[in-house]
Length: 307
Image (cartoon, rainbow, N blue to C red):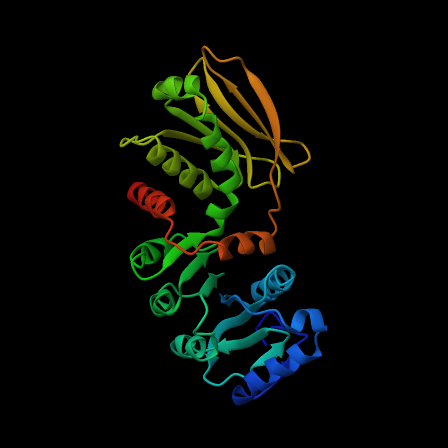
């Protein structure tokens, strides 16, 4: 139990470490027959404080409606032999000593399947050993002192960040503008990017991605405006004094309004769904990615170079 009184995986059952495999098999036998035959597709190792890991467990259960995964939840503390808890395909170790984390992951992961580390908090130096065990590391809410450490591990594992995942729809919609010849011509003179949202780091990642995509070695002038709404991104404007590409979150916060006003092109607007932005949906998207995301790596290096 943590100082805050949160219990990791409260609906789980305590089992001895040697009995984890048996407990997982028994839980599988207790599930409806339609779920028993589904093959696991990956191991997801979530690292962080107990309260955030319980939130992660809920997301992973919802994710399990689409794809079966083994989930390992590990919070860090001073225990060398914490009592494991098992619930469904989820195994939890609460308060494990940092020096024992990589051994626990190596013992519990399914070595024949991809291993994804979902980093929800912890000591940056722990990433080194975890990256060597993982095929992919997904950061979330990581303080900026974690990013330089992560950038040094890009050759060890594929890295991403849920900020980046949340930006996927916004980046895709901006890229679609450049299918229009008049936009490609006009954008050569676009220098100003204004992003309104709740996350300044996400705005910087978007700016570095856009600069890299357009081959702007000198970057793009970014203005970040903090939104008064409880939304990740509210508006993206890219252009000059007279022309503009615009992405605006609709009042419902479920759709994005897109418009392009450039010379030689008839101004038109359309409404596009933002898609499911829940933790389960974002992690489902990450599960589909296997290769390194070079665009993300470039954006991170660009951000670190200006920090």
